[in-house]
Length: 107
Image (cartoon, rainbow, N blue to C red; front, side, top):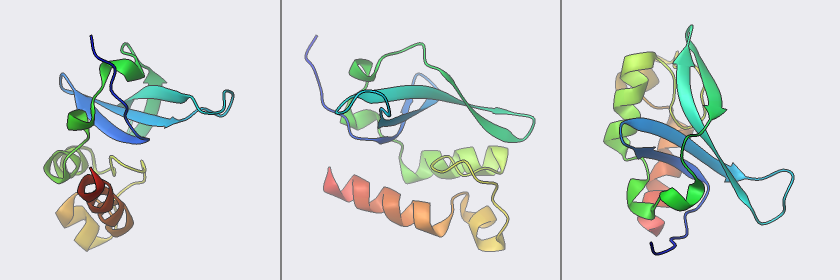
């Protein structure tokens, strides 16, 4: 299996949403958590997959992030509740949308 390099961000694979971040414990390493909504809050749970199982093509799209926001009322990228009417309508906050577009454009 070829190794792919992914960057910190939000990814989807097999219907699940994952967050990849820089490890606080190991410099230069990435950690992965499965995102789950429970009782109206975003929870970061241990992931059943490894970072190596993701590729850049698994990065969350604007449409997927918006669908997550519409379904749960929470931004898929930062985990905050969507309260501004424009953010609720889009399913994602303005800062996260700009960051997502910038990251997707860089790939």
